[in-house]
Length: 184
Image 1 (cartoon, helix red, strand yellow):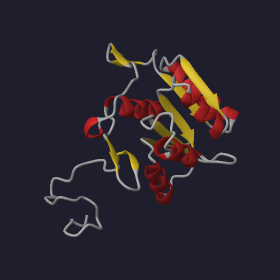
Image 2 (tube, helix red, strand yellow):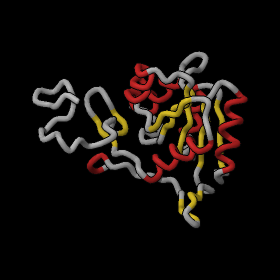
Image 3 (cartoon, helix red, strand yellow):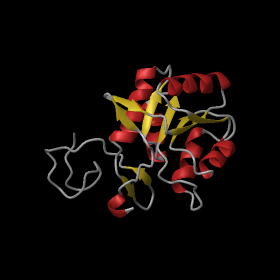
Image 4 (cartoon, one colour):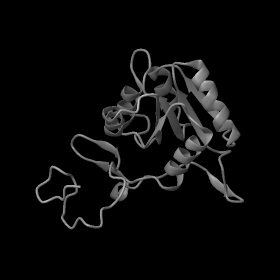
């Protein structure tokens, strides 16, 4: 994509100010059937009609490879390969079925190091359990209407990890370890 822009293929539209998600397809990757059911109910209440479920990474990658998935909700902790492994497979593998797939990480673990691990794996959004419908709606809205541009470096591919511009920063680089950056 030119300039790292992402083409969102989701067919979400606005209907009287509400997001209309009938044409959006979702994948729920969680090894807990109850949690998959909960996310399914929430997505269905928003109008999502096409929802695939997977209990492990291999099934999830297979669903993504089908070409029909617009957004993935991925649990961080799974038996075997975890949700971070799925994200890395989607973002970094040369044979990835969809490097630009919007990924929302769902987890009960919100420690800073886990959030940073998820960000570095290329997730678009992070959602802490217990989940609420309003939080799911906010994350879906973020990846549809305010998706960050994708960047590629030698060690990372995914949404720009910087959430905001700092108007005080005037230099060419924005990372804290770069010479000449401002410590915040």
